[in-house]
Image (cartoon, rainbow, N blue to C red):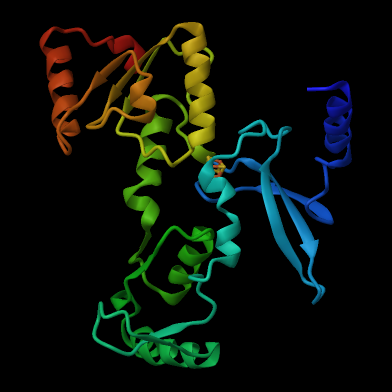
Length: 267
Ligand code: SF4
């Protein structure tokens, strides 16, 4: 290539601005596409109608949880706002259960309908209401609402997912994952992972596993599939799905049989 050509391409590169701001302002917040709450910078730009729209989400380098890393799920957080599939109004089922036949109704209609179902229960026996919510972001409020209604029969998704994990983690290692804390990545010598859902807490766990690897700590994975975290483990036990409880009980049995339990450390 001639010198002239080099000058030309240098000029072309020079003319391209690689740092155009993608929005008018940046809002700092935390991601809730899973429960670990990585720090994010949300770039917003006002549209012609004056309403701000999200243009781009990036990891916040100053946030201690993720230090700038954003996983694919976090990047897709923009779809929580703009997905065409997002619910915009209450839906009333019009066909048989499971048919997917629905129609949009107003909030007034929805509230009227809910009152017609629940008022008779409240006036007679509120405990007949069993109230179950999914992974919403406000379980303290939904629980409070159920208590005010008068039913003890309320639960949420966390009861068979994160809350058990949190309780077990807090009782055993003093913390769990997500907002419940984290293992002691700096001192752990042996890290055993049982069937991790890798789309959850992915940034902090990846950073923690890297710290373990860098220190030469041993990682053992128990998981039917050897992907992701299992692929970098020192030992992988590819058990049959659903047999993890049996494996744990057999380990407990063996420890007891050999009298190999360090009673001082667990009492
Ligand atoms: S790990 Fe991913 S989905 Fe979870 S909070 Fe962080 S960026 Fe969001």
